[in-house]
Length: 427
Image 1 (cartoon, rainbow, N blue to C red):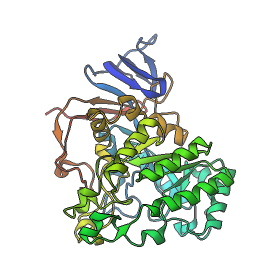
Image 2 (cartoon, helix red, strand yellow):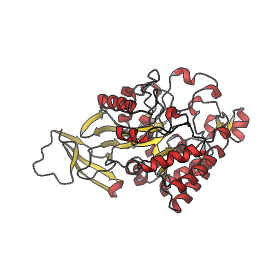
Image 3 (spheres, rainbow, N blue to C red):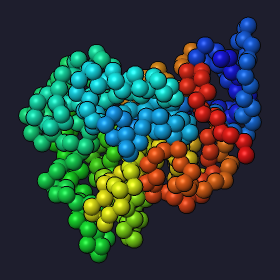
Image 4 (cartoon, rainbow, N blue to C red):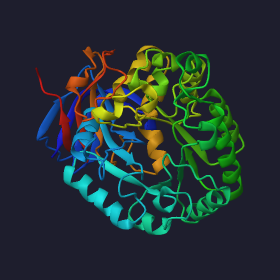
């Protein structure tokens, strides 16, 4: 479909553009910016006056729960929820059931994503078979099947020799490794940040060093092997300092942070709010503010949802016995723009952390509004006024810690490859 988006405020960090203009879409790509292309006839017009026109968002971590955990959520429900937040591309971790350690599972996920047709799904392949950290997976075969990078998800490889070989193998294939730093011995089945709050609440603690010790070990092996690495879900100020130093020394490393850790702290678990049971755990206000500043400074490249929808039973127990994770994919953009409203982030850096920077990490052509690029676009009313309500969520997972929050940004239209995948219904 040929579409024109008229009079919107176009914000495109990849091209350092912030101006009011028109966008012309034809045959699934951006055909023109500003001036109408020769011979172009719009079959649909979108009036975006007073609204933001952004590149489609790229979310580096969304668990659709399919295959294997359809009782929690399905690809239909979660990709619809993602599209509602202006997301046009997601990364799917390898810890599905079956695990993404064979080409057949990759093809299964790709086929289901194609059938749903709302969001592009890029799979991360398992670095080790069964994510057990014992034997390397066939990374080259997974790459040929369509895996965009390699990860061991939430299952750290504790044998440093195997981790080294995994890095070497990935490097030989030109693959990026996604690492969520965690020392399982230091974590020791904890559920909350080690400190006064966890002590007062009687919750098993997780020290900051569970993250930083694992991060330090990985950085040394990255230096040795030369593999391109992306660190997932940083949660502490000390981790930010370590990444900053590694980047200064020329290490090929990037990092992301999830949206919860940019808004919430350990104080939010004071009333044993199980929706705030996350991993990594919510930490201090100093950690939170440092993470936000690291995005503004470019040390942390991307903001992701780390979307983990759960069924009711998963969160219906005492805090320590509940499953960690939050349902956040459909409020990723509104929560990010909330930081802009609070003047904690600039508009350009906030949008870059959701679009062009994740695109660079994944080496995608999208994440920008250049002529000839895929027409992945979202139109956003940033002066709306609405309340997050679990009952109204598209996601099957209602486990959001942001229930009752008032937000102002609201996606009105999402377009993927020139196709409208979400349109807000008028009341």
